[in-house]
Length: 349
Image 1 (cartoon, helix red, strand yellow):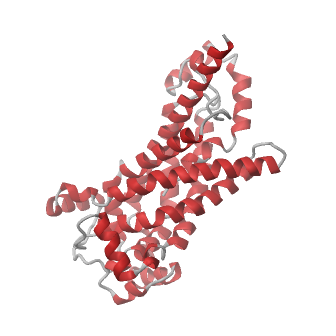
Image 2 (cartoon, rainbow, N blue to C red):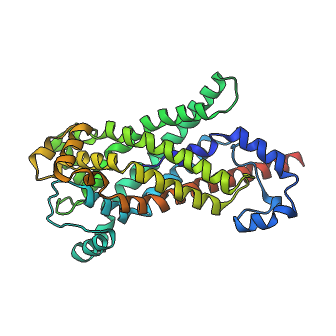
Image 3 (cartoon, rainbow, N blue to C red):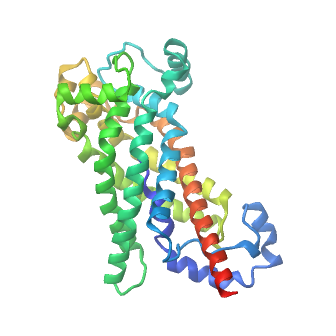
């Protein structure tokens, strides 16, 4: 899961604000064409949205993060189902999927269009709170680390805060992710997410919801770091002035998500095996309890190619998902900053 949309945007805020302050006053006709092409707002409506005002309530922080998380995980959900079906080892179904288009067609025609959204409720229920918690923990931790380092915002403090927030938020999201992937499998017999969760708990215990947690952290840490760095690089390259630009956020976020998704697919294959092991018909798969064991099983059964299964649907799902997440989050920040600026202007009058 991509939680970095809630963290990265403020990682280098002081530096960005300095750049904006240096270019805001003289950004006139010379850059008018650039602003139009990149979808930037008019200079008269530019707001210092990179750093939210100190008076911004916790509820607004949580809302921005939760909205970004829900949008990110739910919009491209059918492709996530295809990814899970292609990655699972020892599936209860005998169906073999040869590609994304073929998988979507087979699933929709044999199981119905609604099957492409099986388990999405679990994602919505988990993504909102986990992203909100992530954002709250990130902001509080970054503030403390920044204060400890002399009060100057820096990438190290932001990165450390993001890492701590990831550990906590993934602990909250992991059970929902397990339920989601169990629901995504064919022929499992679960009526709904409640039935799935209770059945898994009754047959496999609480451990089933967290057996993949260490693997999830191993995957999400590099995923977040890669996406963090790529998004910041792409955004600054496309939009050096740092003004609000929806088109920039869409393109930069999408490319960052694609790169991160591709590079972390092998770990995602291991995670999928662990999270779906209880539904497997293979005794060896059902006994797997760690990332190393799952990796050995995948390599013995499918070779190196087994670690690349599901890469295409994973990229297809993550590319627009992260673009939507970044755009949603940046929009909320811009709206909050604009409202704060308007309120300050009214008070000054």
